[in-house]
Every structure is written in structure tokens, then in C-alpha cells.
Amino acid sequence: MPGMINRMIVSNLRRRPMRSLVSVLAVAIEVILILMVVGLVNGMINDQRARVHGIGADIIVYSGSGSIITQLTGNTLPLKMGEVFARVPGVEAVAPVAYMLNQATQTIGGVNLEQFRAVSGGFRFLHGHAFQPDSHEMIVDDLEAASRHYHIGEQVELLGQTFTLTGIFEHGMGSRTFVPLQTLDKLAGSPNRAATFYIKVTPGVPVATVVERLRKLAPAVKVDSLQQYLSLFTANTISPVIDVFQRVIVGIAMAIGFLVIFLSLYTTVLERTREIGILKALGASRSYIVKVILRESELLAIVGIVAGVILAYGLWRFLEYAYPTLSMQMSWPWVIYAAAVSLVSSALGALYPAVKAAGQDAIAALAYE
Image 1: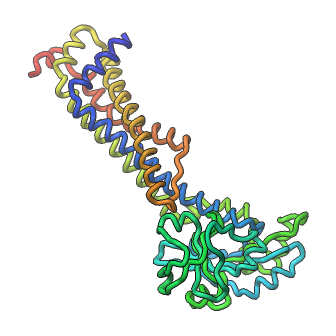
Image 2 (image 1 turned 90 degrees about the vertical axis):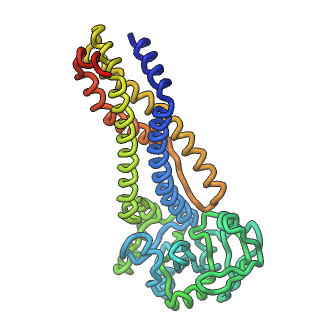
Image 3 (image 1 turned 90 degrees about the horizontal axis):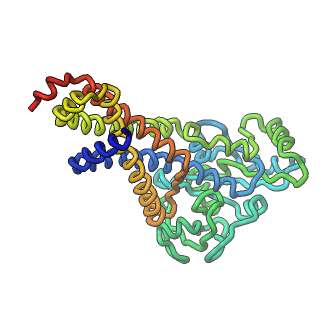
């Protein structure tokens, strides 16, 4: 019996190749939408987390107001605070970092190279060298250089000013672009201020102990261990809008799969009214008819899921090649989630057509033209 059902389903799909193809593409688009949107969001978050972690600090001090994005783009902390933090027992080095958004898309970091080197170990230059203090020179990471086709010595328009690119460093050091701290402060209109302080703890001293000392010393700012701070990097904490956007896209994708499968199978049931009447006249039960329709939707969904995963992976690789700084992440849990959503939406879309087919009167169906 199962073999007969499967042969019947395959035969029905082959008789209507265009409709079957459209249904498969709808499910594939559903999968692609989920994987690409979720992949972009998770990729962006995990990339930012990895770059902050790559600095190598143990503690971070920041204003603590607003979302993580606004915290790291508002230069409100006086640089003199760093001198105070440096005298706290257990603190080995302190590096202030200022940030500024370039055209609301690119985060530019401002650092004092000597202080930053004491915390992070310094930039690992692949080409060129570091910038001079208080100059209109800049350095970028290798992914930014590849994405924008930069070369050493090039004049780059940045923050409304012309900067000379002096070095390309290995990615994973916070921002993708850095300029001198003094220069960024002048351009941002926040002299002698930083957005955050990265702190290196003396080896052997518990990080938690130093965190408590800093919190007592500066209760008006936020002091976290780096691990605690990185745990805040989620779609909801970075921006609640991102989490809502992600849910909306998943909902739209599910609606697409539901509607297309519903329309496809509903029209198929209408076209096969006489065939269904013959099956019922031969003794086919209501459950048998429902099983045929639902299994047909399952087959369309499975083929669409496989096609969607393959296409999403290919698109991911293309975007990774075309845009090196565009971080995406595809993981098996989300592939399984996308497949489950597609199967559920397809089953829901097939449910009414299946019930309608099973409820047809055999005599009326046989008389249908």
C-alpha cells in the first residue's frame, strides 16, 4: 500500500511539472529567507563578539547607557579616568578607545598605539606600518582592505577628511579601521574622551577582584569582565529591532510556504475530483485520501528544503567572496529549524485541501466533469 501511494504521488507531480516546480521553489525561498536573514544577524553578532574578544583585554569599562551600539559610539568617558584605573591594584595596563560612525555604517576606532599595545599585544601588520600620533593616517584590517581594494599609501576619504593608509593588519582587533585617538577626538568634537577602556589584569590576580575594585572606584560607569560583556551580544541586546525583524522575516517565509502549498494542492484537488471519486468508489477511506494529499505536500517540502539549503549555501559562499567584511553564519541547528518550519507550513497548507478531498461524495465526484 505505501508503495502504491508513493507511485501515485510521483505520477501526480509529474503530470503537473510547472505547478510542482513552483511549489518546490516556494519552499526553497522559505528556507533561503530564514537561513540568510538568521545567518546575517548571527554572523554580524558573532563577528563583533570575536573582534572584541580578539583585543585580549580582561575587563571593559563603558558608559552603560543605551544599547551596546550606542555605548560604543558615544565618547563620554574622560581620558583621565584611565590614569586612575591604572593605579588600581591588579591592573597591568589600560587602553582607552574612542569610536565614531562613518556614514552610520562603519565604526572607526581611535587608539593610542602604545596603550593599546600594552593591553592587546599590538596590531599584527601584514603590509605597511602603524600610523603616527595625532596625524591624518589610518590603518585597516585585511578584510576591509580586500573589500574596498585599498593599497598602502592610498588617500582615503574618512569622516569628511582625507587620510593616508599606512598599514593593513590581521583582522580581529576590535574595529576594522583605526586612526590616532587625538585625531578622532577632534573630529568627533569630544576632546580627551573615550567610549570605553580596555583593561589588562596582572597575571595571577583574579579578574573578579579587580572588577569589584573598579566598580567601587567608579560607580557611575559600567565595569564588566570581558566574558560577562561578550555574553550580552545577542540580537535583542544589540537592538530589539533586529530580533523583531528576524521574527517578521521568519513569519513571512512561513506564510509564503503555506500559501503556495495551499493554492497548489487546493487546485490539484479540484482538478482531480473525478480521480478521488474513483478511489473512494474502489473503497479508499477518508484517511487514505488525506494521507495521499499530505504525503504529496511532504514530498514537495522535502525537495524544496534540499534545494533551499543548497541555494542558500551557494549564495552564502558568493556573498562571502564578493563582500569579505559581510559576516554570515550558517549552522546545522538553524538548517534543522528552517526545515522544520517549512515542513510545518507545508503540512498546514495541505491540511484543508486534504480534508476537502476526503469529504467529497463518491457519486458526485464520479459525475464531476
